[in-house]
Length: 427
Image 1 (cartoon, rainbow, N blue to C red):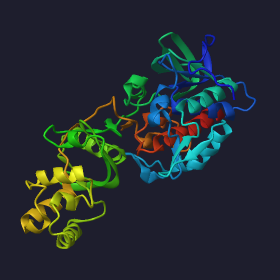
Image 2 (image 1 turned 90 degrees about the vertical axis):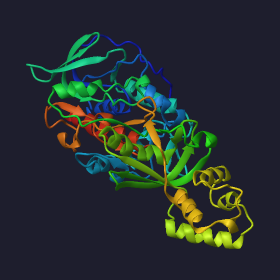
Image 3 (image 1 turned 180 degrees about the vertical axis):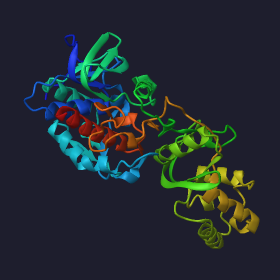
Image 4 (image 1 turned 90 degrees about the horizontal axis):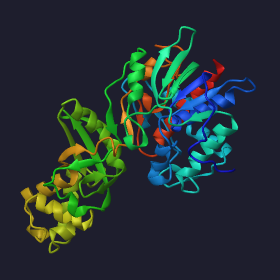
């Protein structure tokens, strides 16, 4: 396959098209390809309009520049949505279909131990170039530097699409403008303003898959670079809302890592709504307080002369063990045999339920996805067509559906792009 530049050559001016796709990110490119394939021999004109000078910036930076295109096990439980279920949408284009699709595009994938699927080249550009190449082969026109500013229903049927270089008439419009995450790649949430004017609701939006900044008094900076398995529990107004295990990464300003990123949307949404929210960290995943205390008693009995810091280091990283002792007001050099009941209880509480003092999230610049958007119930799950404005389709991050880290949000882009592209071409 011959690689093509990520900024397509200028296309001839268009004044009327059959399908206009607003946004040429992952979902938009998928919609363009599936629409092009579904039209068969019909002379449908399909165009993607994007405000960026260079197409696919978000694809290129995803997965640390490797692009985690999907996961080998994708289900509704991997996603969050306030209004409507993503089940039928995901079932229409499952993870295996995505793998087969990429194979047809000439992109071989490899599975990592976590279930994440990456191109064997470990280069996101491989994915982007394959998508652009397929668009070119299908005569799907891509217009960079054509930021759309308004979608207006046309008296002649269809829509008038106003962009920074003029306007065009379109029989069908697919909205794929993304959310607010990673604004440096061109995402600013303006697409929601356009669909609001067309009658849609937009639920409140928050950063998701985003790291946390901790209070400066916390010991995180001393552990920067340390990664470990933990269990996080989120409580909102004192009630349990989420619990998950995974890898946590200590940073100079707070915490990151898959388990933090996945849990973040529960904190950001509750915090924005003014609710009290608490994040508790269990450094012994799956072990409760009673069991942790029993284990600590047994360890102390077996090694009474071992310092508490060294004793805890048998279960958690030594650097963390020392910091936890000090959080409890206990000298790490205290021997295990000298540990009284009150001190032991304090240590157990810190081990299994340390409250992380979150000051704030890292914001849109570091968020990988947006939580919130147009409610799923306002679209037809079989086609992604708007129930509010016929002829309009909503896909990808425009919708109120966000997945956990690991390729799930790309799978959402491919699935919604598949349904909308085929349906718009059929219409």
